[in-house]
Length: 176
Ligand SMILES: CC(C)(COP(=O)(O)OP(=O)(O)OC[C@H]1O[C@@H](n2cnc3c(N)ncnc32)[C@H](O)[C@@H]1OP(=O)(O)O)[C@@H](O)C(=O)NCCC(=O)NCCS
Image (tube, rainbow, N blue to C red; front, top):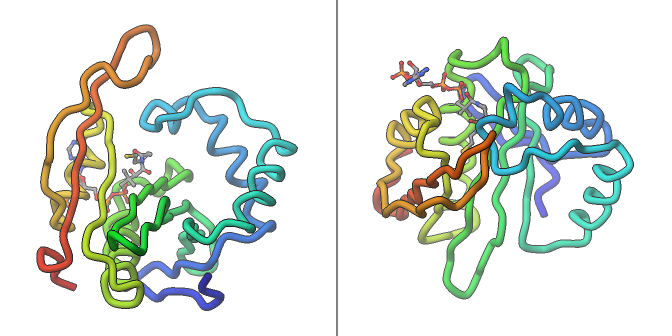
């Protein structure tokens, strides 16, 4: 687990700490944010703290707070880091809605991909995104992700089933 921040162009990725959790709880209870995420259920601070204690014991997950000029605006993380097959999944959220579409998500994604491919020596990074999340898909395509396929009716979202798009990027497709 890394202790030092990762430097992007405009963002800094700082290893997620206990001090970040209260803000995460606000974001993960915001229906405008969770519309774009896999999880919808309300989240309590106690649940978040329990999750954080489990997370700290894991060796296959690394989550970073996205900071802009010292302000925590979102999180990005690698999940299921599989060192045998040199792959992981990535997840990202800019929880501060006022900061959407300012370029921070793209910068944070490029920064974590650079770390995944150069430092962790991964071969492949993948993700799932709701098919209506055009902004996220645009960010992923800008970073070099390619669509692998559709996972049909994978989630129940706001009264209907929704499709997930599975995307991935290989080490030789990433140009830092
Ligand atoms: C998805 C997310 C991480 C992207 O980060 P961001 O900082 O908002 O995105 P950026 O500013 O880096 O880039 C957004 C791009 O999408 C474009 N865009 C914005 N709104 C769009 C829309 N409705 N449709 C298509 N493209 C859109 C922007 O023009 C920009 O592209 P450009 O640089 O070519 O102009 C962030 O918006 C977010 O966290 N949203 C809510 C949670 C979420 O969706 N998480 C991802 C789950 S898979």
